Image (cartoon, rainbow, N blue to C red; front, side):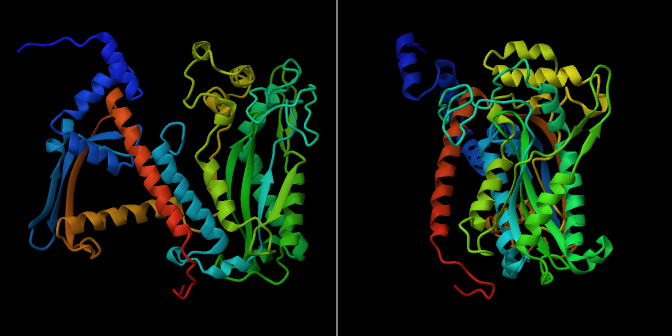
Length: 475
């Protein structure tokens, strides 16, 4: 066979035409011309274009429990590379935009159901009549930073644009309380937990009840998400609602109003404090919420513009973020020396990370170095009270059940095959075989994910244009 050499310039031109480098282009062509490409492409589509799929090897057999007949069998032996690729499920948009999109969708429906109800989740639309607010609790000041005040001019004298990298950074880094900032982030979860305790106490006090008596007539429900500000301090956005004693299905008492909830939230936030003892040369300090506590009624309750969809979208958006606003790394930092290999790390963010490592020995139980990539924050980004609405596990199970019914239908099996207890017996064995893509696979997966997102956006816009359906099932 005669091989005709391809001029390097031609390879470079071809790579530039598809927006990649020559090595990626060569791998892309290898993947596209491999015998199992169509099946590989189908696998990636089923993951939603996942950026870092998990590779599994194994087999599964489904038998009729009564007769022992094989109803369905599957093995990865015939798959491309002998592997099945499944979505990584990472919620961070910086790690996997596709899986983060799915996670954000779950959070959106979970939060929205807790505001306006959803019969598919067993939550009545009457919940719209329950007092509910959208509250924001912020961190205190750790020193002046570059910002965009209402006057338009920062304290430094400049007028910053929205994309100015100086925004959020310290005006005087030598006097900025970096230790206080990372310790506050590290204890933010404790502050939130104490806030929920005090909130129930404040609601009870305003109703003239004890906490025990409050449980018999009213429950406080919430769903919250954490967000990092440009300065690197975390703050929380929460939907807070008052229900009857049995949760979402029970009407709250007449005294439960938006005004009462507003007042109780602000009073509870002002009471919360976490005291830290002195550690070596570090003085004792008390951590509190910032003075800016914003509480807004949600549309449908007071006729304001803050709609349930807008609130749910806002919460879902930040549920997939970490500390990207500060341009920090999205993976754990194994040792401090790794920071020297990140020349693009902003100086303000580097100081916050350094502060985590500096304080690690003083507060060994807080694992500050371990969470330094999160600027000390170690809490969950999205949490909710037990009776707020549905759960993320339930959302994932609904999706899994739908796919299972879809697969059974494609194979000519009854869709409710597994619904009868003990009707089938499933024997399966799976082993982990790796994760991720080669450069060419990654390029193709990004293209697939882009098409999927465009189709999803089109479908979402079409659904948004449909009229609402009420609890009776009527348009």
